[in-house]
Amino acid sequence: MPQDTLEKSNQARVEPATLSDLPQLIQMAMDLFEMEGDFEPSHEKQERGLKLILEEPSRGRILVLRNDDLIIGMVNILFTISTAEGGLVLILEDFFIHPAHRGQGYGSKLLEAVREFALTKDFRRITLLTDKISEESQRFFTKNGFAFSKMIPMRLHLEPEATHSLESEEE
Image 1 (tube, one colour):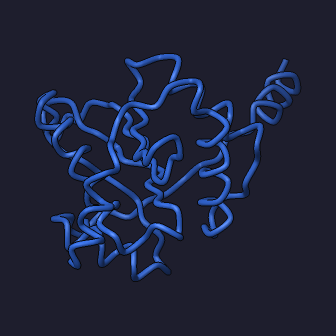
Image 2 (image 1 turned 60 degrees about the vertical axis):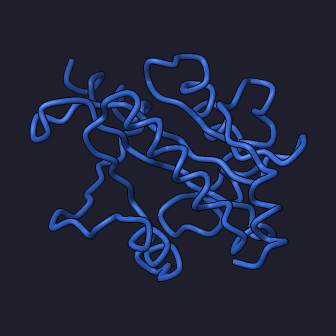
């Protein structure tokens, strides 16, 4: 890594996000979802989801990579329990480095902060989903110790309105 890139990376700091960071976090989440095939950006949904994490620390944390007052990266780490691991595990979501700042060591710095947090708090595993079509993301995470799982993700999307409609029909 060139010296000037290393110095830039060292100037940025990782810290917990706060509610005052919300506007920048929403924009970053929307930028991320613009690139992903599975999700549609929605200011309202991203704001609601980010607030759920920020307002209740027992659910998880949002870490930001900040250079002065500008957030250049973010990651959500959500807490759950794994019976397979017999303890607490992290789910890493919304890992995003602003495109103008990629390739400068910022992603590794943010991921290292997640790893340190997990080890300090005795989490036993970090799981993440990355885009199938993004070889760049897959290379980054495998380079940083992640391995492909034999499991595949599956989703069932629930819409609250649809659930209420079904309950009304059954009554």
